[in-house]
Image (cartoon, rainbow, N blue to C red; front, side, top):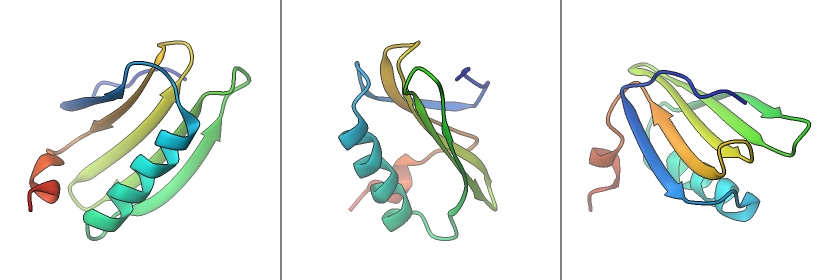
Length: 84
């Protein structure tokens, strides 16, 4: 997996974790209206990348063994969707 240039980058965990990856995907799906799954990519090293589309841009959740982290990249700020 390669990192993409996105405006907003959020490190979720400083190491890859598949369980947290799926929990993070579920949290985004539950809290961001109009978020649509596009692709779930699997790399040969076990890395996962869930790509979403949204009217405001693209969102990517990556469980990246090459980088050694679980992170979210987005074209728009996701934090307002999680303020409660």
